[in-house]
Image (tube, rainbow, N blue to C red; front, side):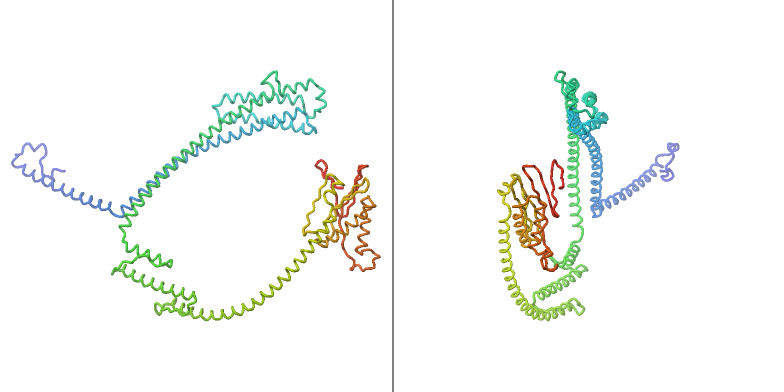
Length: 556
């Protein structure tokens, strides 16, 4: 403080003054200073009380709740980001292990393919293009093998001994494969190699040399496979360790999220409870009742009896709920056919109530009209039902007759079809695929023998079902008659055509007009085999024949 404010002497002049004149003034100024300090303490106390009141307010609780929630979210996001970053790194490493493992699997497949193609190249398969393919496949398999091993070396630098052995076995196997391809170059004939005992001996030594184990191709490929399997196991173990680390990190994150979620839930419940107690319950009840009424449901609790605006709102809601209840009961009664139910509108302006009364009167008159129409329709339906029942009986009788006729026709047609024992008398090895759609069919097989000749045919007559079955009887009888005399397929078909035209009245000398002649016939494929001469003859009409021999289909 400046000395002028306190009216005190400077340090230099103070010793020259008398104490009796200066000390009273000094004490007065000291008491003034103490009084000012008390005023400052009173101001600080008032501000502290205001702060304490704010801490107990709803706004402070909401602020604290949101603060805790935001803090929990911030912690959650930070930990999630950190864990996600760690998991991404672990997953990236796991993908590297998995890719390396996949490359090892491909190299193992290459080694197996080398073994197979090397054996194929050494055995000189027939035809010769297989031998050429084997050489080309070996060249493709050897190409890029060393670069793949180099990739695996970078993926697992701690397996240096295994990588050294892999490169060593690969170089040795490549040299042996080149030597094998040099001994049996593409195009080498098997007969040529079989007479060259020296070269044949060298080929066998390259493949499997019992006198020098480990120096032949089989041993080198086995060693290559063993080291690749070891490397694959290393990658699998590394991937498993990485996956375990990812899983453990996820579990830690899950546990942390659970605790943070529980904390947020408990904090939210506490804040919600405090805010609920601080907000006036009557307003909540009014709001809840409005929500119930908006869904057509009356409130399950009593409204507050007050004389203010809230009480007025509650009484208005009571009147509204009572009106909705009476409207609902009246609508339900009218819906059940009680058209004598009474209803009083809420007021002269109640458009809904007046509309409901008009609807009741309209429904009453409509019900009478509908009852008359129902009686009329019922009488008509009764007559139609009787007619339909009579027609159904007639249809059932006709269906039974038709079914009986088809069954009888099927038994008749089955009598002409060659049985399996009869077919075996002609051809010991044979089969017939016969699947009629309607029980009977216009298709039928035919087997016959005459001396050294064995004849069989597949016949497709025009028509389906019973008409086709009649045509099949005609064709079968004609073939049986002709087969007793002729064995040449062409001659048999000529005679069959003549007989069919005569029976169906299709000849020029039949005396019938063109429109009166029956436009029916059959498609047929017929084969005759002479067992003594070993010859096969074929003739067909719109029905080709095929021979399947050594995977090749030949059309006759």
